[in-house]
Length: 555
Image (cartoon, rainbow, N blue to C red; front, side):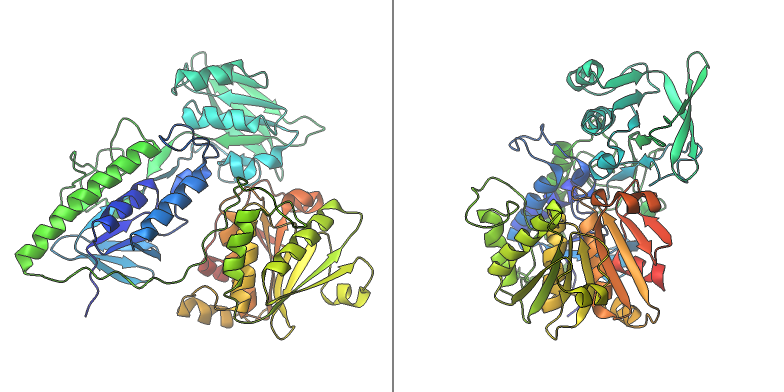
Protein backbone atom coordinates (compact mmCIF):
# COMPACT_ATOMS: atom_id res chain seq x y z
CA UNK A 1 0.00 0.00 0.00
CA UNK A 2 1.25 3.48 -0.86
CA UNK A 3 2.56 5.31 2.21
CA UNK A 4 0.70 8.51 2.98
CA UNK A 5 1.61 10.22 6.25
CA UNK A 6 -1.04 11.99 8.26
CA UNK A 7 1.35 14.90 8.68
CA UNK A 8 4.63 15.88 7.04
CA UNK A 9 6.65 18.62 8.73
CA UNK A 10 9.29 20.45 6.71
CA UNK A 11 11.99 21.69 9.07
CA UNK A 12 13.47 20.30 12.27
CA UNK A 13 13.95 23.43 14.37
CA UNK A 14 11.98 24.30 17.54
CA UNK A 15 8.73 24.85 15.61
CA UNK A 16 9.04 21.61 13.64
CA UNK A 17 10.06 19.50 16.63
CA UNK A 18 7.29 20.98 18.78
CA UNK A 19 4.76 20.19 16.04
CA UNK A 20 6.17 16.66 15.83
CA UNK A 21 5.83 16.12 19.56
CA UNK A 22 2.19 17.26 19.58
CA UNK A 23 1.32 15.31 16.43
CA UNK A 24 3.05 12.16 17.60
CA UNK A 25 1.32 12.35 20.96
CA UNK A 26 -1.99 12.67 19.08
CA UNK A 27 -1.06 9.42 17.25
CA UNK A 28 -0.75 10.96 13.83
CA UNK A 29 1.67 9.14 11.52
CA UNK A 30 4.18 11.96 11.36
CA UNK A 31 7.37 12.60 9.37
CA UNK A 32 9.84 15.44 9.93
CA UNK A 33 12.04 16.33 6.96
CA UNK A 34 15.21 18.30 7.70
CA UNK A 35 17.89 19.00 5.11
CA UNK A 36 20.57 20.02 7.59
CA UNK A 37 20.93 19.20 11.26
CA UNK A 38 17.92 19.04 13.57
CA UNK A 39 17.63 22.14 15.71
CA UNK A 40 18.31 24.70 13.01
CA UNK A 41 19.61 28.11 14.05
CA UNK A 42 19.09 27.38 17.75
CA UNK A 43 22.11 25.08 17.62
CA UNK A 44 24.26 28.19 17.18
CA UNK A 45 23.06 29.68 20.46
CA UNK A 46 25.66 29.04 23.12
CA UNK A 47 23.42 30.20 25.96
CA UNK A 48 19.65 29.81 26.43
CA UNK A 49 18.56 31.64 29.54
CA UNK A 50 15.03 32.83 28.73
CA UNK A 51 13.28 29.59 27.75
CA UNK A 52 10.97 28.67 30.67
CA UNK A 53 12.08 25.57 32.52
CA UNK A 54 15.50 25.38 30.86
CA UNK A 55 17.87 27.07 33.29
CA UNK A 56 21.49 27.47 32.19
CA UNK A 57 20.85 25.51 29.01
CA UNK A 58 22.22 25.87 25.49
CA UNK A 59 20.86 25.45 22.00
CA UNK A 60 22.24 22.01 21.09
CA UNK A 61 21.15 20.47 24.40
CA UNK A 62 17.64 21.91 24.19
CA UNK A 63 17.20 20.69 20.61
CA UNK A 64 18.59 17.26 21.49
CA UNK A 65 16.01 16.97 24.27
CA UNK A 66 13.20 17.98 21.90
CA UNK A 67 14.36 15.42 19.35
CA UNK A 68 14.32 12.73 22.04
CA UNK A 69 10.75 13.71 22.99
CA UNK A 70 9.64 13.42 19.37
CA UNK A 71 11.29 9.99 19.23
CA UNK A 72 9.31 9.01 22.32
CA UNK A 73 6.10 9.61 20.35
CA UNK A 74 7.20 7.54 17.32
CA UNK A 75 7.85 10.47 15.01
CA UNK A 76 9.72 9.54 11.83
CA UNK A 77 12.69 11.55 10.55
CA UNK A 78 14.11 11.95 7.05
CA UNK A 79 17.28 13.81 6.10
CA UNK A 80 16.42 15.24 2.70
CA UNK A 81 16.06 18.43 0.70
CA UNK A 82 12.60 19.38 -0.52
CA UNK A 83 12.89 20.38 -4.17
CA UNK A 84 9.26 21.03 -5.08
CA UNK A 85 5.74 20.84 -3.70
CA UNK A 86 2.21 20.08 -4.85
CA UNK A 87 -0.04 21.16 -2.00
CA UNK A 88 -3.51 21.34 -3.51
CA UNK A 89 -5.91 18.43 -3.07
CA UNK A 90 -6.40 15.86 -0.32
CA UNK A 91 -2.91 14.38 -0.77
CA UNK A 92 0.04 16.73 -0.59
CA UNK A 93 3.15 15.70 -2.53
CA UNK A 94 6.67 16.82 -1.67
CA UNK A 95 9.43 16.15 -4.19
CA UNK A 96 12.72 15.55 -2.35
CA UNK A 97 16.21 14.42 -3.32
CA UNK A 98 15.31 11.10 -1.66
CA UNK A 99 12.07 10.62 -3.62
CA UNK A 100 8.47 11.78 -3.32
CA UNK A 101 6.84 12.05 0.10
CA UNK A 102 3.06 12.16 0.48
CA UNK A 103 0.98 13.49 3.35
CA UNK A 104 -2.58 14.44 4.16
CA UNK A 105 -1.39 17.65 5.81
CA UNK A 106 1.82 19.67 5.83
CA UNK A 107 3.43 22.03 8.32
CA UNK A 108 6.13 24.28 6.90
CA UNK A 109 8.71 25.22 9.53
CA UNK A 110 11.76 25.99 7.42
CA UNK A 111 12.64 29.03 9.53
CA UNK A 112 15.17 31.61 8.47
CA UNK A 113 18.88 31.77 7.73
CA UNK A 114 21.47 34.41 8.64
CA UNK A 115 21.06 37.46 6.47
CA UNK A 116 24.06 38.73 4.56
CA UNK A 117 24.57 42.46 4.28
CA UNK A 118 26.04 42.50 0.81
CA UNK A 119 28.93 44.86 1.55
CA UNK A 120 31.94 44.72 -0.74
CA UNK A 121 34.17 41.77 0.14
CA UNK A 122 31.59 39.98 2.33
CA UNK A 123 31.27 36.92 0.10
CA UNK A 124 34.93 36.78 -0.94
CA UNK A 125 36.22 36.84 2.66
CA UNK A 126 33.68 34.53 4.30
CA UNK A 127 35.87 32.06 6.19
CA UNK A 128 38.85 34.41 5.81
CA UNK A 129 37.82 36.89 8.48
CA UNK A 130 34.10 37.36 7.82
CA UNK A 131 32.03 35.03 10.00
CA UNK A 132 28.47 34.43 11.19
CA UNK A 133 28.88 32.13 14.21
CA UNK A 134 30.94 33.20 17.22
CA UNK A 135 30.57 29.82 18.93
CA UNK A 136 32.12 28.06 15.93
CA UNK A 137 34.73 30.59 14.92
CA UNK A 138 35.40 32.84 17.90
CA UNK A 139 38.52 30.97 18.99
CA UNK A 140 40.25 31.75 15.68
CA UNK A 141 40.36 35.39 16.71
CA UNK A 142 42.17 34.81 19.98
CA UNK A 143 44.31 37.88 20.63
CA UNK A 144 42.87 39.83 17.69
CA UNK A 145 40.35 42.63 17.40
CA UNK A 146 36.88 41.93 16.01
CA UNK A 147 33.96 43.95 14.72
CA UNK A 148 30.37 42.86 15.36
CA UNK A 149 27.84 44.15 12.85
CA UNK A 150 24.30 44.54 14.18
CA UNK A 151 22.18 46.10 16.91
CA UNK A 152 19.77 43.31 17.88
CA UNK A 153 19.82 40.59 20.51
CA UNK A 154 22.14 38.30 18.55
CA UNK A 155 24.70 41.03 17.95
CA UNK A 156 24.69 42.08 21.60
CA UNK A 157 24.92 38.52 22.91
CA UNK A 158 27.66 37.52 20.49
CA UNK A 159 29.67 40.68 21.21
CA UNK A 160 29.83 39.71 24.87
CA UNK A 161 30.76 36.12 23.98
CA UNK A 162 33.58 37.26 21.71
CA UNK A 163 35.27 39.18 24.52
CA UNK A 164 36.46 35.74 25.71
CA UNK A 165 38.85 35.71 22.74
CA UNK A 166 39.26 39.16 21.25
CA UNK A 167 41.43 41.91 22.68
CA UNK A 168 38.72 44.38 21.72
CA UNK A 169 35.20 44.14 20.27
CA UNK A 170 33.73 47.04 18.31
CA UNK A 171 29.99 46.92 17.67
CA UNK A 172 28.91 48.60 14.43
CA UNK A 173 25.21 49.48 14.60
CA UNK A 174 23.43 51.41 11.89
CA UNK A 175 20.65 52.21 14.36
CA UNK A 176 20.92 55.04 16.92
CA UNK A 177 20.55 52.54 19.77
CA UNK A 178 20.29 48.80 20.45
CA UNK A 179 17.03 47.14 19.40
CA UNK A 180 17.27 44.34 21.98
CA UNK A 181 16.23 44.23 25.64
CA UNK A 182 17.71 47.03 27.71
CA UNK A 183 19.25 44.56 30.17
CA UNK A 184 21.59 43.02 27.61
CA UNK A 185 22.20 46.36 25.86
CA UNK A 186 23.41 47.79 29.17
CA UNK A 187 25.79 44.84 29.62
CA UNK A 188 27.32 45.56 26.23
CA UNK A 189 27.62 49.29 26.81
CA UNK A 190 29.29 48.81 30.19
CA UNK A 191 31.71 46.08 29.12
CA UNK A 192 35.33 47.28 29.33
CA UNK A 193 36.39 45.40 26.17
CA UNK A 194 33.52 46.60 23.97
CA UNK A 195 33.18 49.88 22.07
CA UNK A 196 29.89 50.71 20.34
CA UNK A 197 29.55 52.92 17.28
CA UNK A 198 25.91 53.78 16.57
CA UNK A 199 24.62 55.22 13.27
CA UNK A 200 27.51 53.43 11.58
CA UNK A 201 27.63 50.95 8.68
CA UNK A 202 30.31 48.78 7.11
CA UNK A 203 31.03 49.53 3.45
CA UNK A 204 33.89 47.20 2.60
CA UNK A 205 36.19 44.49 3.95
CA UNK A 206 39.27 43.39 2.08
CA UNK A 207 42.81 42.12 2.38
CA UNK A 208 45.28 39.77 0.77
CA UNK A 209 44.45 36.27 1.97
CA UNK A 210 42.59 37.39 5.10
CA UNK A 211 40.68 40.50 6.12
CA UNK A 212 43.08 43.25 7.14
CA UNK A 213 41.15 46.33 6.05
CA UNK A 214 37.62 47.64 6.54
CA UNK A 215 35.83 50.85 5.71
CA UNK A 216 32.89 52.29 7.62
CA UNK A 217 30.58 55.29 7.30
CA UNK A 218 28.45 57.32 9.68
CA UNK A 219 24.95 57.40 8.18
CA UNK A 220 24.13 60.67 9.95
CA UNK A 221 27.16 62.79 9.15
CA UNK A 222 28.34 61.04 6.00
CA UNK A 223 31.86 60.80 7.37
CA UNK A 224 33.80 57.63 6.65
CA UNK A 225 36.75 56.04 8.38
CA UNK A 226 39.04 53.10 7.76
CA UNK A 227 40.49 50.41 9.98
CA UNK A 228 43.73 48.58 9.21
CA UNK A 229 44.87 45.49 11.08
CA UNK A 230 47.71 46.07 13.49
CA UNK A 231 51.03 45.04 12.00
CA UNK A 232 51.62 42.50 14.75
CA UNK A 233 48.13 40.97 14.24
CA UNK A 234 47.94 40.87 10.47
CA UNK A 235 44.18 40.38 10.50
CA UNK A 236 40.93 40.96 12.41
CA UNK A 237 37.40 39.59 12.40
CA UNK A 238 34.07 40.82 11.10
CA UNK A 239 31.09 38.97 12.61
CA UNK A 240 27.75 39.70 10.95
CA UNK A 241 24.55 39.43 13.01
CA UNK A 242 21.88 41.43 11.17
CA UNK A 243 18.87 39.19 11.43
CA UNK A 244 17.53 36.38 9.30
CA UNK A 245 15.89 35.93 5.91
CA UNK A 246 12.81 33.66 5.66
CA UNK A 247 13.42 30.38 3.85
CA UNK A 248 10.26 30.63 1.77
CA UNK A 249 11.44 30.76 -1.85
CA UNK A 250 10.15 27.25 -2.57
CA UNK A 251 6.59 28.37 -1.76
CA UNK A 252 6.64 31.77 -3.46
CA UNK A 253 4.18 30.89 -6.22
CA UNK A 254 2.11 28.62 -3.98
CA UNK A 255 1.31 30.38 -0.71
CA UNK A 256 0.39 33.95 0.17
CA UNK A 257 3.32 36.00 1.42
CA UNK A 258 4.02 39.52 2.58
CA UNK A 259 6.52 41.73 0.71
CA UNK A 260 9.40 40.49 2.88
CA UNK A 261 8.75 36.85 1.97
CA UNK A 262 7.09 35.73 5.21
CA UNK A 263 4.17 33.32 4.68
CA UNK A 264 0.85 34.69 5.87
CA UNK A 265 -1.26 32.63 8.32
CA UNK A 266 -4.19 33.15 10.63
CA UNK A 267 -4.01 32.59 14.40
CA UNK A 268 -4.37 28.82 13.86
CA UNK A 269 -1.28 28.80 11.60
CA UNK A 270 -3.49 28.06 8.56
CA UNK A 271 -2.37 29.27 5.14
CA UNK A 272 -4.51 29.96 2.07
CA UNK A 273 -4.43 26.23 1.21
CA UNK A 274 -6.48 23.83 3.40
CA UNK A 275 -4.30 21.33 5.25
CA UNK A 276 -1.15 23.46 4.93
CA UNK A 277 0.22 25.28 7.95
CA UNK A 278 3.23 27.42 8.80
CA UNK A 279 5.01 27.66 12.15
CA UNK A 280 7.97 29.56 13.53
CA UNK A 281 10.17 32.28 12.10
CA UNK A 282 8.74 31.81 8.61
CA UNK A 283 5.56 33.74 9.42
CA UNK A 284 5.04 37.45 10.22
CA UNK A 285 5.27 38.00 13.96
CA UNK A 286 6.43 40.56 16.49
CA UNK A 287 8.75 38.24 18.42
CA UNK A 288 10.97 35.52 16.94
CA UNK A 289 12.17 33.43 19.83
CA UNK A 290 12.33 29.71 20.68
CA UNK A 291 9.27 30.03 22.91
CA UNK A 292 7.12 31.56 20.15
CA UNK A 293 8.32 29.00 17.59
CA UNK A 294 7.40 26.15 19.94
CA UNK A 295 3.98 27.73 20.51
CA UNK A 296 3.40 28.01 16.74
CA UNK A 297 4.33 24.36 16.28
CA UNK A 298 1.89 23.18 18.94
CA UNK A 299 -0.96 25.24 17.47
CA UNK A 300 -0.21 24.07 13.91
CA UNK A 301 -0.10 20.41 14.92
CA UNK A 302 -3.39 20.70 16.80
CA UNK A 303 -5.04 22.34 13.79
CA UNK A 304 -3.57 19.66 11.50
CA UNK A 305 -4.95 16.92 13.75
CA UNK A 306 -8.48 18.31 13.41
CA UNK A 307 -8.08 18.65 9.66
CA UNK A 308 -6.84 15.07 9.21
CA UNK A 309 -9.65 13.61 11.32
CA UNK A 310 -12.27 15.47 9.27
CA UNK A 311 -10.54 14.53 6.00
CA UNK A 312 -10.48 10.83 6.87
CA UNK A 313 -14.12 10.93 7.89
CA UNK A 314 -15.05 12.57 4.58
CA UNK A 315 -13.04 10.07 2.54
CA UNK A 316 -14.19 7.07 4.57
CA UNK A 317 -10.64 6.18 5.64
CA UNK A 318 -10.74 3.99 8.74
CA UNK A 319 -7.08 3.04 9.02
CA UNK A 320 -5.81 2.62 12.54
CA UNK A 321 -2.68 4.15 13.96
CA UNK A 322 0.23 1.71 13.70
CA UNK A 323 3.38 2.79 15.53
CA UNK A 324 6.32 2.73 13.11
CA UNK A 325 9.00 0.17 13.63
CA UNK A 326 11.71 1.87 15.58
CA UNK A 327 15.06 1.82 13.83
CA UNK A 328 17.93 1.55 16.22
CA UNK A 329 19.80 4.86 16.18
CA UNK A 330 23.10 6.01 17.56
CA UNK A 331 22.09 8.87 19.81
CA UNK A 332 24.38 11.89 20.06
CA UNK A 333 26.79 11.53 22.95
CA UNK A 334 26.02 14.12 25.59
CA UNK A 335 28.96 16.00 27.01
CA UNK A 336 27.11 16.99 30.16
CA UNK A 337 29.35 17.16 33.19
CA UNK A 338 26.59 16.71 35.74
CA UNK A 339 27.73 13.21 36.65
CA UNK A 340 30.49 12.61 39.14
CA UNK A 341 33.76 11.45 37.64
CA UNK A 342 34.54 7.84 38.44
CA UNK A 343 37.52 5.57 38.01
CA UNK A 344 39.11 6.06 34.63
CA UNK A 345 42.12 7.58 32.98
CA UNK A 346 40.47 10.38 31.03
CA UNK A 347 38.89 13.44 32.61
CA UNK A 348 36.76 13.80 29.46
CA UNK A 349 34.48 10.91 30.45
CA UNK A 350 32.07 10.67 33.35
CA UNK A 351 29.51 8.09 34.52
CA UNK A 352 26.86 9.16 32.04
CA UNK A 353 29.21 9.23 29.07
CA UNK A 354 30.71 5.85 29.89
CA UNK A 355 27.24 4.31 30.08
CA UNK A 356 26.25 5.86 26.72
CA UNK A 357 29.47 4.73 25.09
CA UNK A 358 29.10 1.17 26.33
CA UNK A 359 25.62 1.04 24.82
CA UNK A 360 26.87 2.14 21.40
CA UNK A 361 30.05 0.04 21.40
CA UNK A 362 28.18 -3.10 22.46
CA UNK A 363 26.50 -3.10 19.02
CA UNK A 364 29.78 -3.45 17.12
CA UNK A 365 29.68 -6.41 14.72
CA UNK A 366 33.41 -6.60 13.91
CA UNK A 367 36.63 -5.68 15.62
CA UNK A 368 38.28 -2.30 15.10
CA UNK A 369 41.88 -1.45 15.95
CA UNK A 370 42.90 2.00 17.11
CA UNK A 371 46.57 2.96 16.83
CA UNK A 372 48.01 6.03 18.52
CA UNK A 373 51.57 7.29 18.48
CA UNK A 374 52.27 9.25 21.68
CA UNK A 375 54.59 12.23 21.83
CA UNK A 376 55.38 12.26 25.54
CA UNK A 377 56.40 15.92 25.29
CA UNK A 378 52.94 16.83 24.02
CA UNK A 379 50.25 17.15 26.72
CA UNK A 380 47.42 16.73 24.19
CA UNK A 381 49.01 13.53 22.90
CA UNK A 382 48.96 12.11 26.43
CA UNK A 383 45.37 13.32 26.88
CA UNK A 384 44.37 11.44 23.71
CA UNK A 385 46.13 8.27 24.89
CA UNK A 386 44.19 8.34 28.18
CA UNK A 387 40.89 8.86 26.38
CA UNK A 388 41.59 5.94 24.04
CA UNK A 389 42.53 3.65 26.92
CA UNK A 390 39.19 4.43 28.57
CA UNK A 391 37.19 3.90 25.36
CA UNK A 392 38.98 0.62 24.65
CA UNK A 393 37.97 -0.62 28.10
CA UNK A 394 34.31 0.07 27.25
CA UNK A 395 34.15 -1.96 24.01
CA UNK A 396 34.98 -5.65 23.82
CA UNK A 397 35.67 -5.43 20.09
CA UNK A 398 38.01 -2.46 20.29
CA UNK A 399 41.73 -3.19 20.12
CA UNK A 400 44.16 -0.45 21.03
CA UNK A 401 47.84 -0.23 20.14
CA UNK A 402 49.89 2.48 21.84
CA UNK A 403 53.42 3.40 20.74
CA UNK A 404 55.66 6.21 21.85
CA UNK A 405 57.11 8.54 19.24
CA UNK A 406 60.10 6.89 17.60
CA UNK A 407 59.33 3.43 19.03
CA UNK A 408 58.04 2.04 15.73
CA UNK A 409 59.46 4.18 12.94
CA UNK A 410 58.31 1.78 10.23
CA UNK A 411 54.71 2.18 11.41
CA UNK A 412 55.05 5.96 11.55
CA UNK A 413 56.40 5.99 8.00
CA UNK A 414 53.75 3.55 6.75
CA UNK A 415 50.90 5.71 8.01
CA UNK A 416 52.60 9.04 7.34
CA UNK A 417 52.39 10.30 10.91
CA UNK A 418 52.95 14.04 10.52
CA UNK A 419 51.77 15.65 13.74
CA UNK A 420 50.52 14.91 17.24
CA UNK A 421 48.18 13.98 18.82
CA UNK A 422 47.13 11.29 16.36
CA UNK A 423 44.97 8.18 16.22
CA UNK A 424 44.10 6.16 13.11
CA UNK A 425 41.63 3.33 12.59
CA UNK A 426 42.12 -0.16 11.14
CA UNK A 427 39.26 -2.48 10.22
CA UNK A 428 38.71 -6.09 11.35
CA UNK A 429 41.34 -7.32 8.86
CA UNK A 430 43.89 -4.86 10.25
CA UNK A 431 43.63 -2.84 7.03
CA UNK A 432 43.93 0.93 7.21
CA UNK A 433 40.47 2.48 6.95
CA UNK A 434 41.69 5.81 5.64
CA UNK A 435 40.51 7.56 8.82
CA UNK A 436 42.77 9.69 11.02
CA UNK A 437 42.13 12.06 13.89
CA UNK A 438 44.67 14.78 14.61
CA UNK A 439 43.54 16.10 17.97
CA UNK A 440 41.63 14.93 21.02
CA UNK A 441 38.05 14.12 19.92
CA UNK A 442 36.26 15.75 22.82
CA UNK A 443 33.35 18.18 22.75
CA UNK A 444 31.16 17.69 19.69
CA UNK A 445 33.84 15.59 18.01
CA UNK A 446 33.37 12.74 20.48
CA UNK A 447 30.30 11.96 18.36
CA UNK A 448 32.27 11.78 15.13
CA UNK A 449 34.91 9.55 16.75
CA UNK A 450 32.41 7.06 18.12
CA UNK A 451 30.52 7.05 14.82
CA UNK A 452 33.78 6.36 12.99
CA UNK A 453 34.22 3.22 15.11
CA UNK A 454 30.55 2.27 14.73
CA UNK A 455 30.52 2.75 10.95
CA UNK A 456 33.78 0.85 10.48
CA UNK A 457 32.71 -2.06 12.71
CA UNK A 458 29.13 -2.25 11.47
CA UNK A 459 26.22 -2.24 11.38
CA UNK A 460 26.93 1.42 10.69
CA UNK A 461 24.65 4.20 9.57
CA UNK A 462 22.51 3.77 6.47
CA UNK A 463 23.84 5.34 3.28
CA UNK A 464 21.96 6.19 0.10
CA UNK A 465 22.57 3.62 -2.66
CA UNK A 466 23.25 6.23 -5.34
CA UNK A 467 25.69 8.06 -3.08
CA UNK A 468 27.42 4.77 -2.30
CA UNK A 469 27.76 4.04 -6.02
CA UNK A 470 29.22 7.51 -6.59
CA UNK A 471 31.75 6.91 -3.79
CA UNK A 472 32.80 3.55 -5.24
CA UNK A 473 33.36 5.21 -8.61
CA UNK A 474 36.04 7.58 -7.25
CA UNK A 475 39.31 6.43 -8.79
CA UNK A 476 41.77 9.20 -7.92
CA UNK A 477 43.94 9.22 -4.79
CA UNK A 478 42.42 11.92 -2.62
CA UNK A 479 43.25 13.42 0.76
CA UNK A 480 40.48 15.20 2.65
CA UNK A 481 41.29 17.34 5.65
CA UNK A 482 38.31 18.49 7.73
CA UNK A 483 39.41 21.35 9.97
CA UNK A 484 37.20 21.66 13.05
CA UNK A 485 36.85 23.29 16.42
CA UNK A 486 35.50 21.22 19.28
CA UNK A 487 32.77 23.81 19.95
CA UNK A 488 31.43 23.68 16.38
CA UNK A 489 28.10 21.86 16.17
CA UNK A 490 28.24 21.67 12.36
CA UNK A 491 31.67 20.05 12.17
CA UNK A 492 30.93 16.46 13.32
CA UNK A 493 28.50 15.79 10.47
CA UNK A 494 31.09 16.92 7.93
CA UNK A 495 33.76 14.77 9.60
CA UNK A 496 31.50 11.70 9.63
CA UNK A 497 30.53 12.20 5.98
CA UNK A 498 34.13 12.58 4.80
CA UNK A 499 35.26 9.61 6.88
CA UNK A 500 32.52 7.45 5.43
CA UNK A 501 33.83 8.20 1.95
CA UNK A 502 37.28 7.00 3.03
CA UNK A 503 35.85 3.82 4.57
CA UNK A 504 34.01 2.98 1.35
CA UNK A 505 36.85 3.79 -1.06
CA UNK A 506 40.50 2.87 -0.49
CA UNK A 507 41.61 5.74 -2.74
CA UNK A 508 40.44 8.29 -0.18
CA UNK A 509 41.96 9.32 3.13
CA UNK A 510 40.16 11.62 5.58
CA UNK A 511 41.82 13.48 8.43
CA UNK A 512 39.95 15.28 11.19
CA UNK A 513 42.13 18.17 12.36
CA UNK A 514 41.47 20.22 15.49
CA UNK A 515 42.77 23.37 13.87
CA UNK A 516 43.32 25.13 17.20
CA UNK A 517 46.24 22.77 17.83
CA UNK A 518 48.01 23.33 14.52
CA UNK A 519 48.68 26.99 13.90
CA UNK A 520 50.92 26.23 10.93
CA UNK A 521 47.97 24.62 9.09
CA UNK A 522 45.63 27.41 10.10
CA UNK A 523 48.07 29.97 8.68
CA UNK A 524 48.95 27.91 5.61
CA UNK A 525 45.35 27.50 4.49
CA UNK A 526 44.12 30.80 5.99
CA UNK A 527 41.44 29.01 8.02
CA UNK A 528 39.38 31.49 10.06
CA UNK A 529 36.12 29.54 10.05
CA UNK A 530 35.01 25.94 10.48
CA UNK A 531 34.15 23.47 9.18
CA UNK A 532 36.79 23.88 6.49
CA UNK A 533 37.31 21.07 3.97
CA UNK A 534 40.71 20.94 2.28
CA UNK A 535 41.00 18.72 -0.79
CA UNK A 536 44.46 17.41 -1.73
CA UNK A 537 46.17 20.20 0.22
CA UNK A 538 44.99 22.73 -2.35
CA UNK A 539 41.36 23.71 -2.51
CA UNK A 540 39.58 24.95 0.64
CA UNK A 541 35.79 24.91 1.08
CA UNK A 542 34.06 26.51 4.06
CA UNK A 543 30.73 25.62 5.65
CA UNK A 544 28.64 22.52 6.28
CA UNK A 545 28.77 19.84 3.59
CA UNK A 546 26.72 16.67 3.16
CA UNK A 547 28.28 13.45 1.96
CA UNK A 548 27.01 13.85 -1.62
CA UNK A 549 28.36 17.40 -1.73
CA UNK A 550 31.81 16.23 -0.63
CA UNK A 551 31.73 13.50 -3.27
CA UNK A 552 31.04 16.14 -5.92
CA UNK A 553 33.96 18.25 -4.66
CA UNK A 554 36.42 15.41 -5.19
CA UNK A 555 34.91 13.83 -8.32
